[in-house]
Image (cartoon, rainbow, N blue to C red; front, side):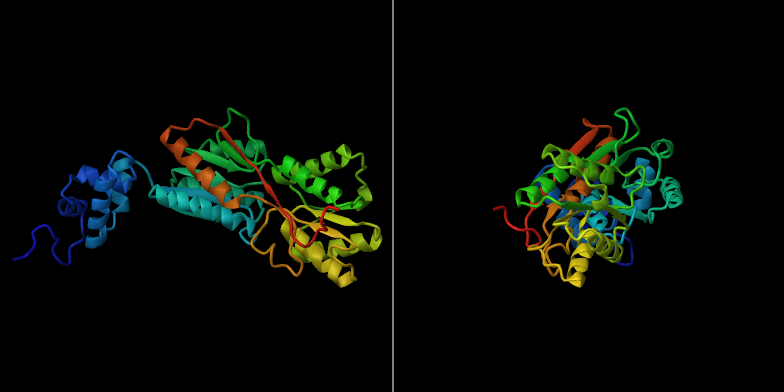
Length: 346
């Protein structure tokens, strides 16, 4: 005799089928699917077993119509080829999945118009909220664009306290001071700085350089403008710029770099010029991307919690979507990671 609780073949499994199989109400099944906390762990596991056994797939369109939500959040990234940003995306995506959401990512290529287009596209897609990693739009343009979104969080960007978005950022000012102080403690004094070709709205580049200046001044050392260079945040661009800097200023005994991509180019420049790292020159990076420990000379850097940046931003976004947010800003710290590209402290 056929099991009446089982759906007939060739028919899509419904929420009611899951409810019958689990011995609970359809409303309780809906709560589990929508990640509602008001369900006991035992009941939740019972329903999850029924879902797996029946192969149930929620009807997203029906779910969206019933809840007036799209169950999609958006994420804009300035450069998907930079290993820094995919880690942020992974953190945001993990939290989105935990909330039963999908993540729609948009790469802007550091182009202000693409950033505008991306925010407009996400608005048209009717995402329930957006996470923005942006350095190209002005504060006014960004604030105007965010007014059209239900909820928003910006990563590594300052916004007015009463602005349209929450903030999750890293304390880059303090982190760069720690890095420069460590390099100084190893005995180096003629320190060059390889900065990124910065946007006027880049919180990250401004705060890192401000931290560099503050650490030098605190130790009574001038910031020599001849020791400063800017480049594109790529290994090839920074390699060429580092070669020019070290050829013009051969007395430099340390290079502090804006990020690990630039530091990777600096390491290649040193190898090409026959300069021993760290005996003749110390090289430090920032961010601790996945390649930092496998360069020819493992890179001393500041570990930025990239995954946590994305995860914390997504969690704040869901709180803002639900109207339960209790904080407008989260500040994370970076941690010094000492490897082979800098000498030990004597």
